[in-house]
Image 1 (tube, rainbow, N blue to C red):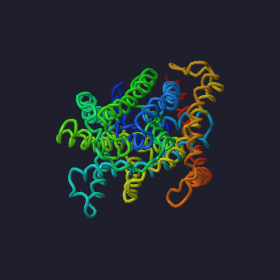
Image 2 (cartoon, rainbow, N blue to C red; image 1 turned 180 degrees about the vertical axis):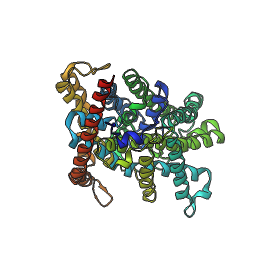
Image 3 (cartoon, rainbow, N blue to C red; image 1 turned 180 degrees about the horizontal axis):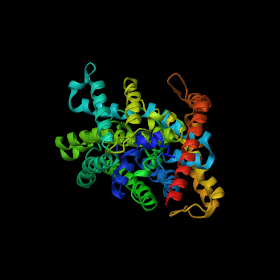
Image 4 (cartoon, rainbow, N blue to C red; image 1 turned 30 degrees about the horizontal axis):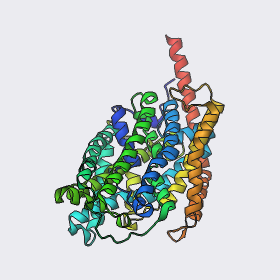
Length: 469
């Protein structure tokens, strides 16, 4: 009997991506989470320098490191395409696996338009010509188009680009940190218009937003070299790099005497100009553009693997499982998501921090639940890296991030976003995931029947081959 070939296997035939090693993985993770010091301005203006530094130091201890430990264990034990979706599906079943992916993709629609918009905002500072008409939107669309091309070139191209972008965008902040001791109090008497105050609680929320997204790197696990070895090291290394990239420039700005009350978007470029002249100011603004570009580029890499993995499991139409024959890039997924994100460019610059944290928080809670469930249900699963302390240790690790999420719900659940309360809007998105899963039931049943037929054909072919031998 002729072996029945899977349509997905045919679509993926010829896939030969170059494996991702440690430092490219660290750089890609850096952009999936942070993208540099930009984004810390609101923490300084809302909390003041002393408390801002305290928040930026404590948040990774309570939020990032526990998450990195969880991802290190699951990423090493289950290095599957789709990452956190595959973990939750394995541990908690199809319903929750689908919900995990749905929450991430739904949040991306709101979140991904931020980065091209940030790119255009800093571009206008350098070239005001882009501020008139539809030029800014076209520039944002060009950012999306270039990131699509890089992602179609494969995971290695994106990771290598991230390494170089990290070096370039870190350079102006390294210069600020080096020059600040020679300009102590240089801006102490500068006048400042107070920025819109968000307070210490708002500063904590913004810090959480700046430190979230560690699990995004898990979706490319199938393309990582020695994932059981590189994932734990990459996660913990990236936590340290991100924390330093936030804390050291804030300390330098404090030492230079920059008024905290007026510290807002663009203040890093102004500080760079005071310390190093107009060339450093321009370089810092250009680095902000590269930061926005690098974050969007890396997140395209992460999000595009979710529809691919879901299509391979029969959760989405088979077309999403198609990959580029040479690079292995999921081109259908990349193009469809890019069109959705591009349609949101005109929403303007609104970070939707509260909604982002709510949706991310629910998905993160599912990941910690998967960690505990796999410890209980699959104790013999090979784990090259494990969270210390057994089951009790995994539960203890989950407590600080979950406590911060409860805090964020209490602080921002009543905020109004897009004409509705944030908590109500997030609840509607969650309910939408369950509805879509229910509507897709017949298609999943057909997929499973097809898989059974294919697996039976493969088994019979294997037996026949053995008899012939």
